[in-house]
Image (cartoon, rainbow, N blue to C red; front, top):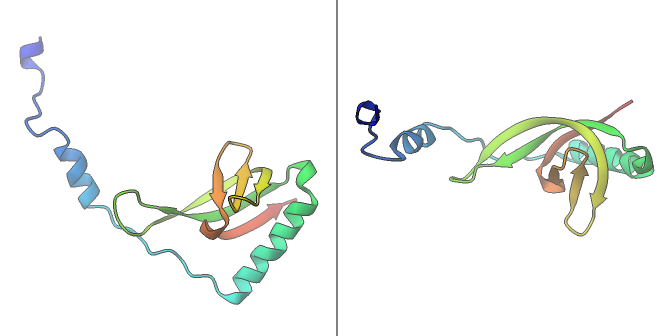
Length: 108
């Protein structure tokens, strides 16, 4: 049976081709109004951190192979805020840097 299995002469070729076809977006620039909104939401999160507030938002995820990336929607409870790393620590284990957050809202 092994002699009839498919043979990939160029290992990794399909991955390179699919990576080449990907498009990336540039990191969104936030205006003053959006930054003010984020600051207000962070203040509310900090006030209610003990209750682990549920947040929904959009963050920028950098591409590992090229310049740019894509935006991703997330929803989770906030476990902690790491001021040393400037990151929001979510209950599902993700850590999102403040600079990567494009939009954020508390769900009541």
